[in-house]
Image (tube, rainbow, N blue to C red; front, side, top):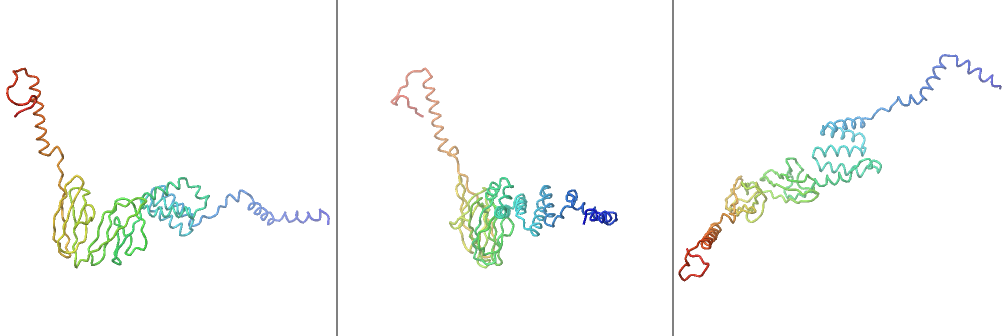
Length: 316
């Protein structure tokens, strides 16, 4: 077969309209311009992440966190763990933020971690804002609240990561008096709280307050905390002492009835300074009088004194 007999049919086909249309379509699909125009449709996870990023930039942290959680549920991409950790950080939910950032550090590839500057510093900062709290409680089902938020119910199988700093700790159980403590939880440290719930049938609740802030409260020789302090005690007579550095302690005895709640205001006694003590001012007056009298003796020309006292002494 010669070349002309092969090319002739192609020329005749090219004249047909459908051939030209098919050829144009093939060329368009194969062109780089078409490849740029057809972008892949974003997934539900990608759309949620973009929404979360926009909300985070707008400082709408609660909504951003919800968007990141939605995105992660659809596609558990480690990058989302970092983003949700930052949202939690801005919400001051430091234990959850630390857990999310640690998970990112564990699950992300080396290339992805390298794209996050200051990751180690961020983890260290979050660790300084989190404490490990061990809760010991013998009353099954007692509710534990920290800062007004419920941590869970007793018993706790493991320590709980909580925000560091001053926190209000409460334990509540039906048939028992509330247990309350003010805790100063150490950042990057640990603390253990032993919850002693007192039965309403045999015990009373004592609340000790004072005008002297940060005073320490002792009941029957046992420290129960700083004012205002609450403790459940068996009905009967108890000794209460409130003390503070620089003050003399204040003590009293109280009688409690089963089931009652009693408030006691007890203020440590201010300790007088050395300038307020009578013997200091008396002694100072004597010294001052001696100095004055001596000055007069030395500066006044007069006849030599007569008598049997020693030179330089002062008589009154």
